[in-house]
Image 1 (cartoon, helix red, strand yellow):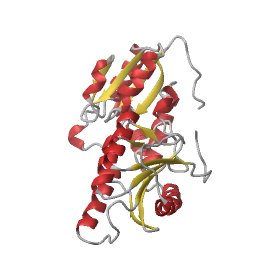
Image 2 (cartoon, helix red, strand yellow; image 1 turned 30 degrees about the horizontal axis):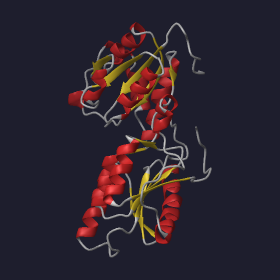
Image 3 (cartoon, helix red, strand yellow; image 1 turned 90 degrees about the horizontal axis):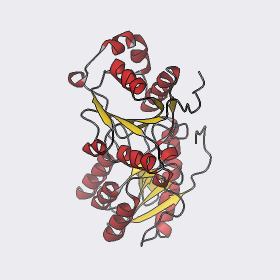
Image 4 (cartoon, helix red, strand yellow; image 1 turned 135 degrees about the vertical axis):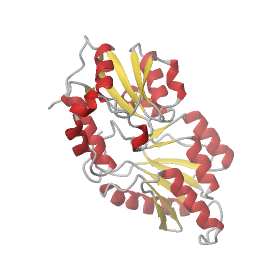
Length: 293
């Protein structure tokens, strides 16, 4: 089914909110542009910052209530943003809508994160909603070639970035992760289901145990969207916390894919990088694989 165009009879932007600061930033951008919003916040995931805007809290599994609220609030376009973890059974509150949709829900929960998210988008579109990206509502969140702070990558870091770009694209095509760490011209860590912060914690542990011979300040975190990734629902993000974790891991900087990675609180991210002597760089990773803008 082709997603419907904007419907003036349903002007409200619905934001299905996971964790972190992105949902509130998207709501603020939409509000500043004069567009009404309603946040559908997932309990146990969404941040309390969403309560500054019109909102409802939902448990995992309340599918019927979700669609009742979308209809009642006159939502037309939907943004899905924020970090989420696959729920455990104790956090799921199944309602009638979920029961009626259970065969389809079970079918699209099989597979990697990329597959699951694409099926969620299709599920919403089949109900008549248009799914749009957080970056379409708040384009200033996206890192571009102008991203930089006080520090710049040197020649060795440029080599690590090149290695990291190649590795990240290969891993992304396999739907494994969005980030790698390269030191001394080789990849020493790749992101899996644990996420970027946990991967960087492993790097810090390797350094403490003497497995990484390079001195502090060597190496780079490279973060990119998967080549086939639907950026409407799963654009990678970095922020001040990422910078702090990179510094604890003893790395020299962060390189992101220009135009395809969001920066949560750009000013604070740059300030933190400057203070911790971490470089920030946004690079064009090239057109590898099938890409959705």
